[in-house]
Image (cartoon, rainbow, N blue to C red; front, top):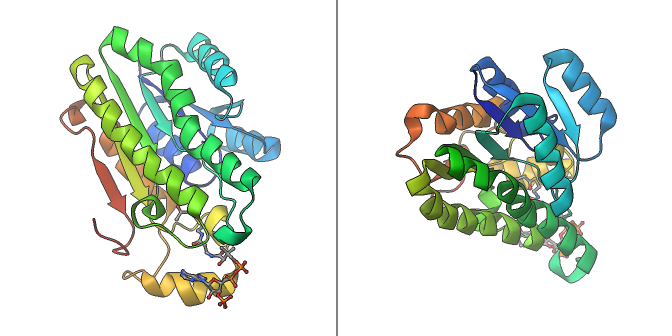
Length: 241
Ligand code: CAA
């Protein structure tokens, strides 16, 4: 039986490319989404990948949602924590709500989702967890104190959990995409994007979602078992750690 992969935020943007690349690589794939029913429906129509609606910020919803996916497809072998949101504002204008929403989804969402699959992975002595962090968790970004804090937290989470999972055949890795040509990035004011951001990318362009998806396929492979706790930067040369 093909291994089962679950991709959060898997019906749009980078997540959609990851879902499709995993399917093309032979995995059974399920994708979650939080709100956009129309996008999820057309994604399923176009790709045949089943979508499930719940918020990764809700612990019980994650537990119940994972149980449903496992009832439909079988035990989850691969979890890609991709779901993420932005609520950008300079810090002096940032509201507690903007802080909380981003932390709840982009950081606590990883706890909620990974907790729901972890025991099963430990019992079966196999698992692959890939956390989609961000260049802005590595370098920080003005206007994103909330997002940068959450994405940096994702890297600490990855490294701690990699140590816990190692003996149980579970690898936990992070990918830090730079600026990728998704709706999230295109929502940035065009002037800010063209005048402040793209000039800082040495390759001179935004990345493609497929360029991140390819890295996920590499990290989740059966023969990638020695790679754990790592952070893979894919940012067009914008930032080196
Ligand atoms: N460093 C220091 N100061 C900066 C700055 C920077 N990088 N960017 C802006 N400022 C300054 C501006 O010069 C300005 O100063 P003055 O008032 O003295 O002129 C002040 O901060 C306010 O800047 P804005 O006029 O841009 O403020 P705004 O309130 O209109 O917009 C913002 C704020 C929404 C955060 C906007 O600056 C912005 O969109 N910035 C880009 C943020 C960004 O990169 N987001 C990434 C989203 S994509 C993503 O997150 C995916 C991923 O993982 C990469």
